[in-house]
Structure formats: C-alpha cells, structure tokens
Length: 578
Image 1 (cartoon, rainbow, N blue to C red):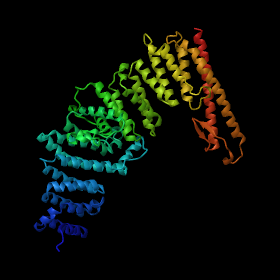
Image 2 (cartoon, one colour):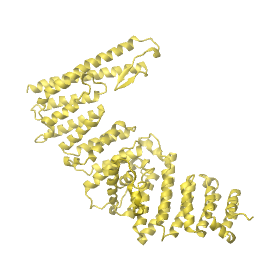
Image 3 (tube, rainbow, N blue to C red):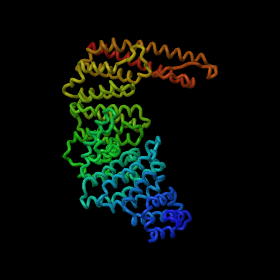
Image 4 (cartoon, one colour):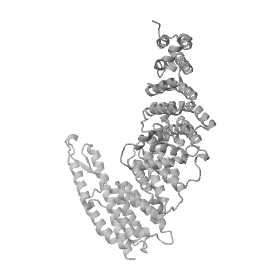
C-alpha cells in the first residue's frame, strides 16, 4: 500500500530530508491526497515545532513554514483555516503560535468576501492563547522596575504581542481602504481592545521608568490602530458605564446570549470588560501615549469624560499587582488635573468620588509597594484640595468615618487643619468650619472606641494629630470665629478625661510588663513567658529584646500624649480667658 502524503512528509521531516518533504507537498500525484488530508498534515507539520526549533534547527523551521504556505495555496481555504484555528487553540509553545499566523493571515485575505465569522473565530483563539501566558510576579520598585523587561513571562508577553501587528495590519489596511462593513472593523477593534487587558495590564508601561521599552512600543501600536479603526474612542465610555453598573449587580447569566446573532463584537465580556476598557482609557488619557486628536473629539463634556474614566481608575486600583495600580494612579493624576481649584462640592453628588477616596485609602494603607503607598497619599491630598472648603470637609469626613487606621485618620485630620488654616485667610470663615459642623468633626477626630480602655498604642497617630489640631485651634481662634470655645466642655469631659484615665492605665500596664522582663534576666529565652498585645495582635513569639523595644516605644508615646494633653489644657484655659 502506497504511503500517504502525511506519513511521507512527516517521516521526511523527522529524518532531515527537507527537500523531499517540500517536493512531495507540490507533487501532482499527491495533490488529491494532500487536499483530502490537509487537517492531518497541518497538525503533523506544526507538531514538529518546538520553542527552540528556529535556533537549533533553522532548516526544519523554514521547511515547515514553506509546507504550511503550500497547504494554503492548494487546499480549501475554509477547511484549512478551521484546522489552523484549532492549532492556535492547542498550541504547545510560542513557536507553534507564531508559525501559524502567516498562513492564517493569507487564508483570511483569500476569504475577503466571507471572512466575518472566520475572523472572529481566529481572533478568539488568539485571545485565548494570549490570556494563558503566566503573569509577571515581582516585588520590584523604582529603578528596579527596569529589570521587568528581563522577566521570562514579560519577555513572552512582548514576544507574542510583537507578532500581532504584522498579522493584523494588512487586514486593517484593507478594511480602511475598502471602507469595509462596520462589523469587520468592530471585530478587529474589539480584539485590539482586549489586548490591553490581561496580560498587558500587568506590565509596567510608565514612560518615566521604561520610556523605550518594547512593551510600550507594542502598546502604542495597538492604541494607534484602535484609533484608526474606531475614530472616536470616547464612544466606549458608554461601555464603561454599562460594565460598572453590571459590576454592582449580583452575578447572573448574561441574558444577551439568547440573541447572539444580534450581538455586537463589543457585547462579549471576554473582550470588552472593565479591565480591557480600563487599559484602553489608561492609554488614551494618562498622557503616556500619543493619541491622534480625532480619536477624542471635544464634543464630550469634560465632567462626563472625567467621571466615567474614574470608574476605570477605581477598577485598576482594586488590583493588588503593581502594573494595574500604577496605571490607575497615572490615569487618576491626569483626570484630577482637569478639575479647577475650588471645584464646587455639588460635584460630590457623584458617588464615584467616594469610591475613589476609599480606593486610594486602601492603597495607602495596604499596598505592598512603598512607592504606590506614597503616591496614593499624595493623590488623596490632591483629590481633596481640588474642592472648595465644603467639598474638602465632605471627603475628609468620609475618611474619618471609613478609614479604620490610626495613621490615615491622623492624615485626614492634618488635611482638615490645613484647610481651616487656609480658610482663616478668607474675609469670612466658611460655615463648614464653625458651630455644629466643627463640633461634628471634632467628635470624629477625638473618638476613643473603647473609652478609657482603648488601645492607645494602636490609636497613637490619631490621638497625637487630634491633640495638635485642637491646640492649634485654641491658640489660633482667640476671637472664637469657629465656635471652638463652645466645644471645650465636650472636649474636656468626653475626651481628655477618658484619655487621662487611659494613659494612666496603659502606662501602668506596660511598666508591669517591663518589670516582668527585667525580673526574668538570666533565664533562657524559652522560659520567658511574657506576651504583649498591640492592636489586637498577641506578640509572644518575638525575642525578649524586641518586646522591651516595643514597651519603651509605647511608654515614649504615652509621655508625648501626656505632654500634649497638658499643653492643650493650658491653651483651653487661655482661650476661655480672652
């Protein structure tokens, strides 16, 4: 029985008889066999490719490329394309993915009049492969971020993304020149937008650190091509609103799937979702990439553009990884610059500002990256100070109510102090700093959650900042413009009294602990059974010397607080006497 063309070519490739393999692929006597078994031949040829074939066996790689090109010329375009799409889905390595792209491109060009579904299936398969690339995981900051381009997974991402423009650019050119139907444009545009999500969203694209990185070059190319295809990128702001609203609803089956024939390519969540849209608008509005003017027409209200983009910012800030959060910070900085100084508090009717405030607070407290924590603190201040005094007070009050962190509450008190200091320079003090509104803020600042039994070590930052603020106001407002004098009784009875009791109890507690440690000198470490409770955490496994340092630090804090309480009491007496 005569050997099939698939077996013949496969054995030739295995034995290194590349000329014979190529000859068989164009031999007339095998033409029917090749056409009937093109699926098996495509699978066999691509299966010979390993990640290092191009380097170790360039002749084999070149032969396989030529064989696939011959298959494209001789076989049914529809059948061959179907198998190539299958090979993209099951590709075992990046080299197999890469070698398929040119034949697929040629087949799509051949099917120009009926490529609609074929193009969609092809791009879906490519997206699936790309999204399977592992994400880069490194705790790198500052100049260390330059090393990211050397990461194995980042190199893979860049390598795959660099293969894409040569694949889709001829299609874009053909579509734009022929003014092809909108559906084909939309399929390509949706694919390009999806590329700005996972995994690219995790790669550092900051021009200050990586101005000439390959990842930025790839991203810039994708953004430019999206602009060419869709012209008005701002039309996707509607999709941002839609997906934001969807994210607030309980998870449910997508009702649109019952009418898939009527769906636009932009209606598939796999391609267009908050992550991919956030990647898109980061590219458009962060200032990190050049964007043609026609892509962002000025007919849109700045307020609408900013508020809708803030949904993207909040989404990016919800990630733990450096890449998305850094992009959210960059986009946020640019958007806040759109607001004039003394923006009306009425803008805060839009709840996105409170979501943004909470997201920045979370980053400032919990992010594992010091650079991002510091940047979040700056953005909290920038955001608050964009508003007139009433707006500032509304946001500061929100932080005081929701930030369960002494340091962040202390920072909010400092922002409030700075604002009231600015307000004293005005001809008339705004109402938000006087009377009941001032008293309301003071009660939030001077809150001891467990009264005299509150953990003063955990609350130290908040207490110290609050006492400094009250002392400042007692000295500054000797004319009682704010009505602080009417607050003194509450401050003294509800706060300072409890605080003095708490200081006495806490100091006594820590002094006993210190005495116990000193009395245990000479004992082996494992026999010293003395625990310290700080912020609800029982510290009993740490070295004895570390425990002593913690106790001394706490006693120093108590001494500082005690001094501030005494000075505040003096200032209150002086203010009352004026």
